[in-house]
Image (cartoon, rainbow, N blue to C red; front, side, top):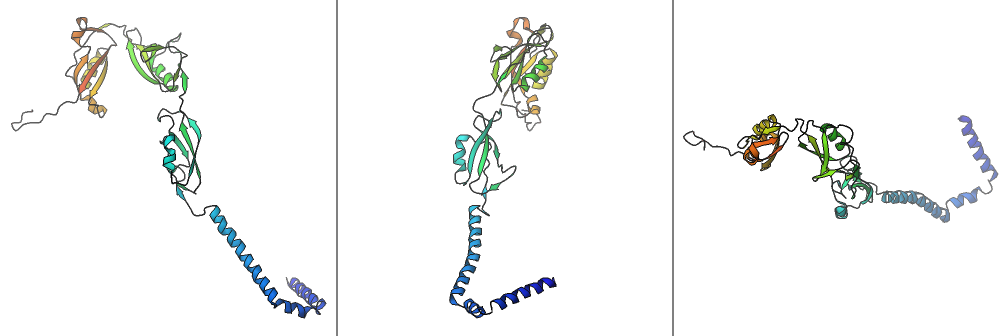
Length: 296
């Protein structure tokens, strides 16, 4: 380190010795008006250029400015422009998919998402959206009535795995296997292509050979009692609630006010096992005891 300092001093001394004749003129130049003006200009530029660059960079990148990200999931594409108005943000539909939960054209995913990642971004940011496709997806109906014996439970699993909704009805038969598939009362053959989400009715056997059953009169029973009575007789209860029941426990206490068929509407009051009895059930009227202790 000492040798470096000594070297620098020696170098400066040599320069001064060699240019000793011009040293006076050089010192006079250092204090001249021309040099001082140029020195001030150079220092000013050295300070102003970085300062302006930093400020323009902050303005270009919107440093410190944030805009709230609107939640667009559930919004229809036709309403996006109105919902994005005034946000200083852009949106782009870059993907579409199928969904049974939302109507076609509805946003089901966005990025960024204020509920998942970012609730605010810089102005001008683009929000990428995924919507439900406007054309449905078609699925092929599996073979459930061919050479293989298929139970109604297996049929339900196979149909639901392809996106179909499943309902059941029965016909008298020695077993409870699938007899046919129906959509809106019409038979559907295996291999047919139906829109995903279509309700398919699985027609299956009753499993009791269609034996004759005396139809019970369930009028006046609670839904719970009527269901127990019909199940014991190998019959199916289909209830229409008036008004609509709030929950399962509430519905069990509704009272049957009418049924179809009735014992008097069928020959000898006999129906085939596995038949469906449709009943209307109404909410029971609460009784209030009077001053004598009797119920009114």
